[in-house]
Amino acid sequence: MFSAIDWSLVAAMLLITALAFGGTVAVAGAMSLAERRVSAWMQFRIGPNRVGPFGLLQPVADLIKFLFKEEVMPEGAHPVLFRLAPALAAIPAMMTFAVVPFGIGNVTIPFLGIDRPLVVANLPVGALYFLAIGSLGVYGIILGGWASNNKFSLLGSVRSSAQMLSYELSLTLAMAAAILMSGSLQPMEIVRHQAEHGWNVIYQPIAFVVFLIAMFAETNRHPFDFAECEPELVGGFHTEYSSMKFALFFVGEYSAMVGMSGMITTLFLGGGHVPFLAIEHTPWWLSVLAFAVKTGFFLFLYLWVRWSLPRFRYDQLMDLGWYKLIPVALANLAVTGVLKVIL
Amino acid sequence: MDLTLPDLLGYVLGAVALLAGLGVVTRRDAVVAAMNLVLAFFCLSGIYLLLGFPFLATLQILVYAGAIMVLFLFVIMLLGVTKLARTTIGVPTGLGAVIALAVAAEGGVLATHLAAKNAAGAGSGMTESVEGVASLLFRDAFVLPFEIAGVLLLAAMVGVVVLARRDLTVRGLAEFAREHAFDPKPLVSSRPDAAAPDGLGTGSLAHADAPANGTTKGAANESAGHLSSSSQGTLAATAQPTAGVH
Image (cartoon, rainbow over all chains, first blue to last red; front, top):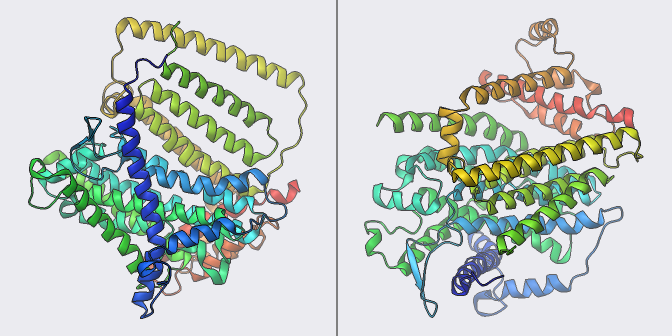
């Protein structure tokens, strides 16, 4: 029944999948440390530096602590959905990275002798997959707030999910402009087009800025982090969560940041393309390094913005999303389309 | 018959989709029923993927699971109707089940027929790629039906707004415009009954946001505040019937 399967291909795909998802989760863990170290650095503090060299083992210590904490379930909470919500928040966030190419071209995997592109799934509709899976992250937030049987949680979840739904539109429109530039929904193809014709950030600065702003809102990060404005909503949708379930929400948030940073790199900054270097002359490890540097910059930007800008008010957030970003992104898309036909 | 791995996966997905579909109609908890529907959509998407339609599979998740069901959950949560009334299986339910079975059987026969036909004609390949679907929808075959569907949806949307806000008559609007010619803000506060007692604060959320709107902004933004506060009013109005239910 399984005779027709090429097992070495399966092994190669499993290896790449394990590398990509392992990498996402590892970077997510590192971000939890970077968050505190960078904030300390920006505020002239020292930050956690006790566990391991430079505090590098702090995420491991956090993980062990989370695993041994008591799990509290509030009275009247929905038993199934309360447990399901953190997983629904974390899993789609980790899955978004599947279509992000973390390098250019193919790599021959040693021992197996199989040539694979540097992406988990080279889908012809990769960009749409990213949007589709990304839009599922909102379930974890809605259900987490609702199943907790707490009105602060519910209010927090309504706020966060309304925000995510609103900014998804601008995100999609900005992405559509980049897709129009290269005429393909396949992320690998978008990267290749940029390597040959110049990065999209040069041709599509407006779409780039809209995507950047929407990306902060989509991941519920500062300055749009209404899930966690402590004075009003306690902890937002995860107020009632404790132990590893609470940690899972954060794994989801950091993974979504990794996926978004990878996607903006792919769409606007040429993915793994090294400037002034043709694809044929780029070794695969150099393209992976270039991708990591660009993605790392956006991950740092998340922290940089957090300690530089004040938080928006909720009406300002909705105002910005609906009355400014969407019209701008729409106009940009229309102009891009017209120019694409004329030129 | 030789069972291949995609076949096996297809049967598993189909079985889970059926079970989830049953869950949708049998669960009394509205949120659980909605989540069952999401699961069914996922299984359908997997089946599309196995059949070689990745675009359709992605759209299934993007549109149904990602957008429509999220709005469903919003409505369920805002209305607060979480436990549905217990129903008994009587003549109407039985009749409905029979009709559903008949439609399903018809669909099955039709699908088998089409599959045989496609196998003979080796498929057109048009519906598999994004370009194929786009040219079918926007250029070749279905331009008019597509546009008509768009207009229909718009009409439905306008209808919903009118139904949700019965005070939005032409006369009422003119009166409102005269009264609030330079200050659109009181649209929300003029409806003190808008916040349903157990709408879980959605009404008060709208109230809290409205005064902050446009206090320091120009005239252009005031019209923006007008629009947003009217939509919030709609939201609160939809939450209102809850008071009667409980």
